[in-house]
Image: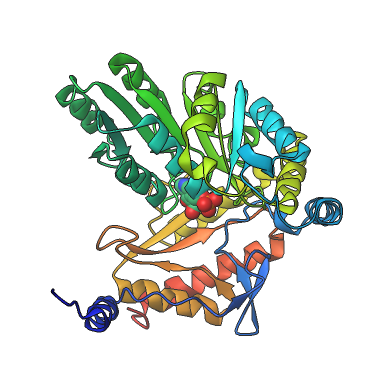
Length: 396
Ligand SMILES: Cc1ncc(COP(=O)(O)O)c(C=O)c1O
């Protein structure tokens, strides 16, 4: 019998993470979804959360969650397919489908779970999944769980995708999957081209609208903005970002959603979301569907900031959304810039490899519609000071 030294194994892995500067620590943060958060008790302007529309703080969502807790308690009690269903779940799915212009929708435990569901239901050993290299980790993990062949194309490179589709022309089944807004770059997928290639090659199209939901296309997402909602087969998104709540969704034709209800193991074998969360999501979606959120203001703030950063000679890649990378290159440069901005009361996270490609460490600005004009002025000034400090060689 062989024995394995688990203690030594864990010590070695943790030491390796430290040595590579990849140690992860949970930050000392409180009220992290608010416009200003608390960092070890210090108040900082929050350019780090995904609460892009500031909806998490809205009275409508809080009141809906409180009512649901009073009326229905704190858990759904079981999987949806057993006894975990309740009226607000059905209504949230009806409204999500209507909002997305699709035949049906299914609400799931999180966006991460939604991607696991989609990949494990539609992909298997006989499927090749063509996936943008910068797609979210939940897509990557879903493909692995499905045991499908994973073919990753260079980010946004449609010639590369077309070549790979040709190379795998004989595959029994093909899926093309893409984020619509990329979470570390704030750029958008070339969806028109993807849909065209999918039609040419008989591939199922899957879009992850996690960062576009609530923001682009009147909140309905990039596919809607580009008039491609009917050309995409599977629309995945989340209530946990701009919608200020929690949980994921998949919308599509009735047969697409029936496939998920019947075969998605992460849906079937997990307790349904609690009433509080579903009620908050429903309140948020009603608000956005009625045009009560401020996506236009958010995108205008973003355009202004990109303009300002370009004038200061900062590289913001191909961002066209509320997510703006400020690409600095080295890890030390990104960490020093983050600390510099923090000293000025503005929290912008530093993102380093392996979350982004080597040599592209960056600040990742996540704007939000509830920032005031004065807040934006403060952000602009902080970046001006950062540019001066860097040009004087005071920072790496
Ligand atoms: C592109 C993308 N897809 C899916 C998810 C997962 O969504 P959730 O946080 O609701 O699990 C995220 C969030 O981190 C994301 O950025």
